[in-house]
Image 1 (cartoon, helix red, strand yellow):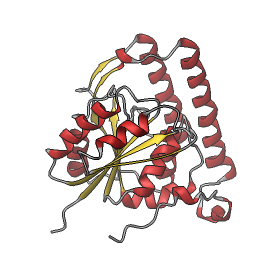
Image 2 (cartoon, rainbow, N blue to C red):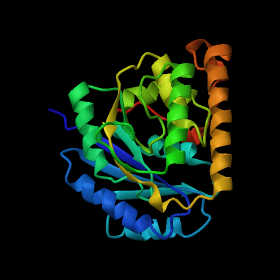
Image 3 (cartoon, one colour):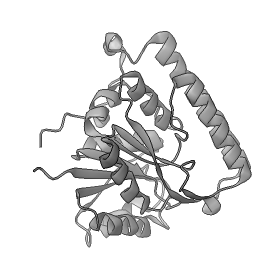
Length: 265
Protein backbone atom coordinates (compact mmCIF):
# COMPACT_ATOMS: atom_id res chain seq x y z
CA UNK A 1 0.00 0.00 0.00
CA UNK A 2 1.26 3.46 -0.91
CA UNK A 3 2.39 5.47 2.10
CA UNK A 4 0.55 8.78 2.49
CA UNK A 5 2.75 11.81 1.99
CA UNK A 6 2.25 14.90 4.12
CA UNK A 7 3.48 18.40 3.28
CA UNK A 8 3.61 21.06 6.01
CA UNK A 9 3.80 24.70 4.94
CA UNK A 10 5.11 27.25 7.46
CA UNK A 11 4.59 30.89 6.38
CA UNK A 12 7.03 33.21 8.15
CA UNK A 13 7.19 37.01 8.28
CA UNK A 14 9.59 38.87 10.60
CA UNK A 15 10.38 35.71 12.58
CA UNK A 16 14.17 35.98 12.75
CA UNK A 17 14.14 35.55 16.56
CA UNK A 18 12.06 32.38 16.60
CA UNK A 19 12.16 30.68 13.19
CA UNK A 20 14.93 28.20 14.00
CA UNK A 21 13.24 27.05 17.22
CA UNK A 22 9.84 26.99 15.46
CA UNK A 23 11.03 24.72 12.66
CA UNK A 24 12.83 22.42 15.09
CA UNK A 25 9.66 22.01 17.17
CA UNK A 26 7.57 21.21 14.10
CA UNK A 27 10.19 18.80 12.74
CA UNK A 28 10.28 16.96 16.08
CA UNK A 29 6.53 16.35 15.82
CA UNK A 30 6.80 15.24 12.18
CA UNK A 31 9.52 12.73 13.07
CA UNK A 32 7.00 10.88 15.25
CA UNK A 33 4.28 10.63 12.60
CA UNK A 34 3.66 7.54 10.50
CA UNK A 35 3.55 9.63 7.33
CA UNK A 36 6.29 10.41 4.87
CA UNK A 37 6.71 14.16 5.43
CA UNK A 38 8.21 17.30 3.95
CA UNK A 39 8.50 20.63 5.75
CA UNK A 40 8.48 23.80 3.66
CA UNK A 41 9.16 27.19 5.23
CA UNK A 42 8.05 30.15 3.09
CA UNK A 43 9.67 33.46 4.03
CA UNK A 44 7.16 36.16 3.11
CA UNK A 45 9.56 38.92 2.15
CA UNK A 46 13.25 39.43 2.88
CA UNK A 47 12.69 42.20 5.42
CA UNK A 48 14.94 40.80 8.17
CA UNK A 49 17.17 37.75 8.73
CA UNK A 50 14.40 35.15 8.79
CA UNK A 51 15.45 33.63 5.47
CA UNK A 52 19.14 33.47 6.36
CA UNK A 53 18.55 31.86 9.74
CA UNK A 54 16.06 29.32 8.38
CA UNK A 55 18.43 28.45 5.52
CA UNK A 56 21.30 27.86 7.95
CA UNK A 57 19.14 25.28 9.72
CA UNK A 58 18.79 23.26 6.51
CA UNK A 59 22.50 22.43 6.70
CA UNK A 60 21.72 20.33 9.75
CA UNK A 61 18.16 19.38 8.74
CA UNK A 62 18.23 18.57 5.00
CA UNK A 63 14.56 17.51 5.06
CA UNK A 64 13.55 21.11 5.72
CA UNK A 65 13.10 23.22 2.59
CA UNK A 66 13.24 27.02 2.77
CA UNK A 67 11.88 29.21 -0.03
CA UNK A 68 10.90 32.85 -0.23
CA UNK A 69 10.77 36.04 -2.27
CA UNK A 70 11.89 39.66 -1.99
CA UNK A 71 8.67 41.57 -1.23
CA UNK A 72 6.10 40.85 1.48
CA UNK A 73 2.95 39.56 -0.24
CA UNK A 74 0.76 38.41 2.66
CA UNK A 75 0.14 35.18 4.52
CA UNK A 76 -2.32 33.77 1.98
CA UNK A 77 0.16 34.26 -0.84
CA UNK A 78 2.94 32.65 1.18
CA UNK A 79 0.84 29.57 1.92
CA UNK A 80 -0.18 29.17 -1.72
CA UNK A 81 3.46 29.64 -2.76
CA UNK A 82 4.47 26.80 -0.45
CA UNK A 83 1.61 24.61 -1.65
CA UNK A 84 2.80 25.10 -5.23
CA UNK A 85 6.17 23.64 -4.17
CA UNK A 86 4.67 20.70 -2.27
CA UNK A 87 4.35 17.04 -3.24
CA UNK A 88 2.09 15.74 -0.48
CA UNK A 89 -1.17 13.82 -0.75
CA UNK A 90 -2.22 15.82 2.31
CA UNK A 91 -1.11 19.44 2.57
CA UNK A 92 -1.25 21.38 5.81
CA UNK A 93 -0.07 24.72 7.06
CA UNK A 94 0.77 25.96 10.53
CA UNK A 95 1.71 29.48 11.55
CA UNK A 96 5.23 30.27 12.66
CA UNK A 97 5.60 31.81 16.10
CA UNK A 98 4.21 28.74 17.85
CA UNK A 99 1.10 30.34 19.32
CA UNK A 100 -0.39 27.08 18.06
CA UNK A 101 1.29 24.00 19.48
CA UNK A 102 2.62 21.79 16.65
CA UNK A 103 1.45 18.79 18.68
CA UNK A 104 -2.01 19.69 17.37
CA UNK A 105 -0.91 18.30 13.98
CA UNK A 106 -1.34 14.75 15.26
CA UNK A 107 -4.99 15.32 16.13
CA UNK A 108 -5.64 17.02 12.78
CA UNK A 109 -4.33 13.94 10.98
CA UNK A 110 -6.30 11.54 13.18
CA UNK A 111 -9.48 13.41 12.26
CA UNK A 112 -8.56 13.13 8.60
CA UNK A 113 -8.48 9.35 8.88
CA UNK A 114 -11.51 9.01 11.15
CA UNK A 115 -13.80 11.05 8.87
CA UNK A 116 -12.20 10.47 5.44
CA UNK A 117 -12.21 14.25 5.30
CA UNK A 118 -11.68 16.74 2.51
CA UNK A 119 -10.52 19.43 4.94
CA UNK A 120 -9.78 19.47 8.66
CA UNK A 121 -9.36 22.78 10.47
CA UNK A 122 -7.95 23.47 13.89
CA UNK A 123 -10.69 25.02 16.00
CA UNK A 124 -10.57 27.14 19.13
CA UNK A 125 -14.19 26.18 19.71
CA UNK A 126 -13.70 22.43 19.74
CA UNK A 127 -14.80 21.21 23.20
CA UNK A 128 -11.39 19.77 24.07
CA UNK A 129 -9.25 22.60 22.70
CA UNK A 130 -6.99 24.40 25.16
CA UNK A 131 -7.03 28.11 24.39
CA UNK A 132 -5.60 31.05 26.29
CA UNK A 133 -7.22 34.13 24.79
CA UNK A 134 -8.70 37.48 25.74
CA UNK A 135 -12.47 38.18 26.00
CA UNK A 136 -12.13 40.68 23.13
CA UNK A 137 -10.58 38.09 20.83
CA UNK A 138 -13.19 35.52 21.89
CA UNK A 139 -16.02 37.96 21.07
CA UNK A 140 -14.62 38.79 17.63
CA UNK A 141 -14.15 35.09 16.88
CA UNK A 142 -17.77 34.35 17.74
CA UNK A 143 -19.05 37.26 15.65
CA UNK A 144 -16.94 36.29 12.64
CA UNK A 145 -18.06 32.67 12.91
CA UNK A 146 -21.71 33.77 12.74
CA UNK A 147 -20.93 36.02 9.78
CA UNK A 148 -19.26 33.25 7.74
CA UNK A 149 -22.12 30.87 8.53
CA UNK A 150 -24.65 33.38 7.21
CA UNK A 151 -22.65 34.44 4.14
CA UNK A 152 -21.25 31.09 3.02
CA UNK A 153 -23.20 28.34 4.80
CA UNK A 154 -20.07 27.05 6.52
CA UNK A 155 -20.99 24.75 9.41
CA UNK A 156 -17.59 24.81 11.09
CA UNK A 157 -17.35 27.05 14.14
CA UNK A 158 -13.89 28.51 13.59
CA UNK A 159 -12.34 29.47 10.26
CA UNK A 160 -9.34 31.49 11.44
CA UNK A 161 -6.94 29.21 13.30
CA UNK A 162 -3.58 29.05 11.51
CA UNK A 163 -3.62 25.26 11.27
CA UNK A 164 -5.49 23.49 8.49
CA UNK A 165 -5.05 20.39 6.35
CA UNK A 166 -6.42 19.64 2.89
CA UNK A 167 -6.56 16.71 0.52
CA UNK A 168 -4.48 17.51 -2.53
CA UNK A 169 -7.46 16.87 -4.81
CA UNK A 170 -9.35 19.70 -3.09
CA UNK A 171 -6.53 22.17 -3.63
CA UNK A 172 -6.15 21.16 -7.27
CA UNK A 173 -9.74 22.31 -7.82
CA UNK A 174 -9.81 25.31 -5.52
CA UNK A 175 -6.45 27.13 -5.66
CA UNK A 176 -6.55 28.29 -9.32
CA UNK A 177 -9.73 30.26 -8.51
CA UNK A 178 -8.49 32.19 -5.47
CA UNK A 179 -7.73 35.90 -5.25
CA UNK A 180 -7.20 36.82 -1.58
CA UNK A 181 -3.53 36.93 -0.63
CA UNK A 182 -3.71 38.35 2.89
CA UNK A 183 -6.33 38.43 5.61
CA UNK A 184 -9.28 36.27 4.54
CA UNK A 185 -7.41 33.57 2.64
CA UNK A 186 -8.70 30.92 5.07
CA UNK A 187 -12.32 31.88 4.46
CA UNK A 188 -11.95 32.10 0.69
CA UNK A 189 -10.54 28.61 0.35
CA UNK A 190 -13.20 27.13 2.67
CA UNK A 191 -16.05 29.00 0.98
CA UNK A 192 -14.94 28.00 -2.53
CA UNK A 193 -14.35 24.38 -1.49
CA UNK A 194 -17.84 24.25 0.02
CA UNK A 195 -19.28 25.84 -3.13
CA UNK A 196 -17.61 23.15 -5.27
CA UNK A 197 -19.10 20.35 -3.16
CA UNK A 198 -16.19 19.48 -0.86
CA UNK A 199 -18.39 19.32 2.21
CA UNK A 200 -16.48 16.84 4.36
CA UNK A 201 -15.05 19.60 6.55
CA UNK A 202 -14.35 18.84 10.18
CA UNK A 203 -12.87 20.58 13.20
CA UNK A 204 -10.11 19.21 15.40
CA UNK A 205 -8.91 20.39 18.82
CA UNK A 206 -5.88 22.63 19.15
CA UNK A 207 -3.72 24.06 21.88
CA UNK A 208 -3.21 27.83 21.49
CA UNK A 209 -1.62 30.52 23.63
CA UNK A 210 -2.32 34.07 22.48
CA UNK A 211 -0.50 35.71 25.39
CA UNK A 212 2.60 36.17 23.20
CA UNK A 213 0.70 38.26 20.64
CA UNK A 214 2.50 41.61 20.35
CA UNK A 215 0.04 43.31 17.99
CA UNK A 216 -1.01 46.84 18.92
CA UNK A 217 -4.67 47.80 19.25
CA UNK A 218 -4.42 49.95 16.12
CA UNK A 219 -2.86 47.11 14.12
CA UNK A 220 -5.47 44.65 15.38
CA UNK A 221 -8.31 47.01 14.46
CA UNK A 222 -6.90 47.48 10.97
CA UNK A 223 -6.49 43.72 10.61
CA UNK A 224 -10.14 43.17 11.57
CA UNK A 225 -11.33 45.85 9.14
CA UNK A 226 -9.28 44.41 6.26
CA UNK A 227 -10.63 40.93 6.99
CA UNK A 228 -14.20 42.18 6.85
CA UNK A 229 -13.56 43.97 3.55
CA UNK A 230 -11.98 40.83 2.05
CA UNK A 231 -14.85 38.69 3.35
CA UNK A 232 -17.45 40.96 1.75
CA UNK A 233 -15.52 40.79 -1.53
CA UNK A 234 -15.48 36.98 -1.40
CA UNK A 235 -19.26 36.94 -0.93
CA UNK A 236 -19.68 39.32 -3.89
CA UNK A 237 -17.49 37.20 -6.18
CA UNK A 238 -19.10 33.95 -5.05
CA UNK A 239 -22.79 34.83 -5.13
CA UNK A 240 -23.12 37.88 -7.37
CA UNK A 241 -20.36 37.64 -9.98
CA UNK A 242 -20.17 33.81 -9.81
CA UNK A 243 -16.46 34.37 -10.39
CA UNK A 244 -15.40 31.02 -8.91
CA UNK A 245 -17.63 28.95 -11.22
CA UNK A 246 -16.10 26.90 -14.05
CA UNK A 247 -18.00 29.05 -16.56
CA UNK A 248 -15.81 32.01 -15.57
CA UNK A 249 -12.52 30.15 -15.89
CA UNK A 250 -11.14 32.70 -18.36
CA UNK A 251 -11.38 35.42 -15.72
CA UNK A 252 -9.29 33.58 -13.12
CA UNK A 253 -6.05 35.41 -12.41
CA UNK A 254 -2.97 33.32 -13.21
CA UNK A 255 0.26 33.69 -11.26
CA UNK A 256 2.96 31.25 -12.46
CA UNK A 257 4.57 31.24 -9.00
CA UNK A 258 1.34 29.85 -7.55
CA UNK A 259 0.78 27.24 -10.25
CA UNK A 260 -0.47 24.19 -8.37
CA UNK A 261 -0.02 21.17 -10.59
CA UNK A 262 -1.72 17.78 -10.37
CA UNK A 263 0.60 15.49 -8.41
CA UNK A 264 2.02 12.75 -10.62
CA UNK A 265 5.01 11.81 -8.45
